[in-house]
Image 1: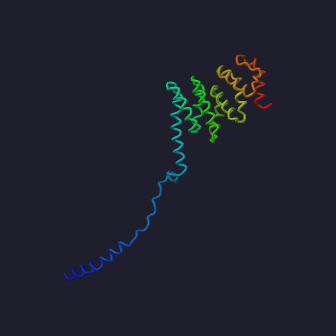
Image 2: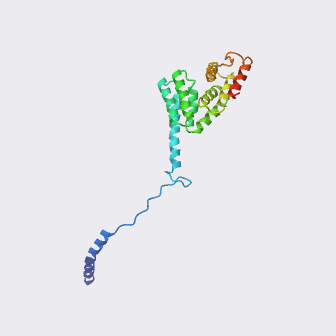
Image 3: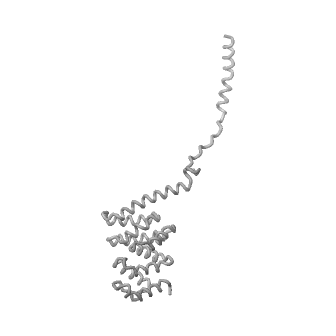
Amino acid sequence: PRAVHAASLVGGALAPLVGILLLTWTPPSVAPAQTMAEPGGAPADSAGSREQIRQAGLTKRATRRARELADLGRSERERRYAAERLAKLGVPFGVAPLLEAMSDPAEAVAATARESAVQLSSGSDPRCRSELVSIARGPDAELATHAARILVEIDFEGARALLVERLADPSVPLLLREATHAFLTAQNGGDALGYDTFASPAENEAALRAWRAWADGR
C-alpha cells in the first residue's frame, strides 16, 4: 500500500511536467515520400514521361481524325473538320491521311486537306517533312504526287524535281497529272513548256526535258 501511495504521489507531481513537454514538443520534419520511379529509375512524373503521355494522346486523336477522313459515309463537314484538326495536332501521323483526303470526291474536303497538309508540313516538327519526302519517293503514284506538290508549296529543296517526275509517270491518274501540270505551269509563270497531258511519253520527251531543266534551275 505504501508503494502504491508513493507512485501516485510521483505520478501526480510528474503529470504537469509531462503536459508542458507535450505542448512544447515539435515532431521532427518528415521527408516527403519519393515519387515512384518508372522502370529504369526515371521518376513517373519526369518530363520525358509526360511527353510520352502527351504524344500517346495526340496519336489517339490523330487516329480518330484519320478514320473520319477515310470514312466517306461521314458528312462533308465532318471530313473537313477532321482535316483541320489533324493539322492542328501537329503530328507526323497526320500527313498520310491528309494526302489521301486530297483525292476526296468533295472539292471542299480536298482543298481543306491540302491546306491542312501545307500547315502541318510548315510547322516546327521536321518529321512531318521527312514523312512527305518518303511518300513523294514511294511506290504509290497518287500519294507521291500529292506529297511532292505539298513540298513544292512549302519551298522544300528539290521538290520541283520530284513533282516534274510525276508528269512522266503514266500510273498517275490522268486528271491528277493534268492538275499537276497546271500547278507547275502557274509556278513557271504560265509557260506550259509544250507538255500535253494526253500525249504519249515519247511525244512529251522534249517537254519533259524542258521541265526537268526548269526544276534544276537551268
